[in-house]
Image (cartoon, rainbow over all chains, first blue to last red; front, side, top):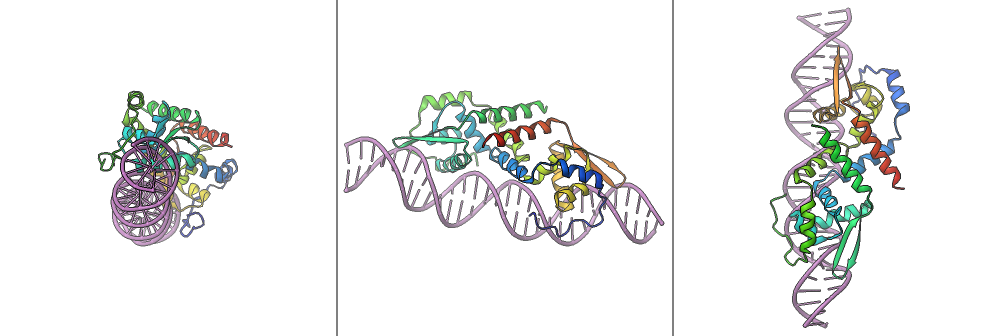
Length: 121
Length: 121
DNA sequence: TGAACATATGAACAGATAATCATATATAAT
DNA sequence: ATTATATATGATTATCTGTTCATATGTTCA
């Protein structure tokens, strides 16, 4: 989706100076991809709910599933993603696995997000 | 996907006190959906790039397409989404339509996001 | 060891999403 | 009026994503 410039429109207005300036001040392209991926983690309501719930305290998979009215499998899959992204960590206690937030970074992000959507009215 | 609790696991550990407490302190469910939707806007690299580029100055559709090496149509579609979400506004000058950020809110969000991913190393 | 439980995970499926393609609309210029 | 240009948009398509289903893994207890 990046190397496919088949129909870049041909008759373009192109304000060269503006484009050149924007290009020079534009952040590294890879950074922008990372940024999109970062926001993508928070773009699913199941994951948001999990993170929100874990702000209180660590919790086992079953409890989270019960609390969110979701299946154990669905929660487990999302927890795996969150763990891969290093947003949560876990510890096993017998049969039970407890998950908790990896750091309080996440709390800040959620709080800021909420502030933004509440400002918007 | 919310009213379908077919296979909520039956043999559950459920720590009642923990669940009850989390439930009581949990934000409004609708807020969490809104929050996910909010982050979803920033979860696509094309949209992130557009927003990033518009931080400098207003820009027309063609210039953005050229700058991001994308098709006019793709950019136009994404601009429509961004406008619906009130992240960008536009003005027409003859044949050309110039887009700009709706407010500097967005700058803050992008900056915070970048800070977060850069802290992570 | 075997039964019960808690979690993890691969495969399949369904819904969402973003790009493309074709075309419509809007404006300007001749 | 006709043509060229700039943008918008509906339809289609390909891909991505999240859930479910079935089952595997890991742990405890009798």
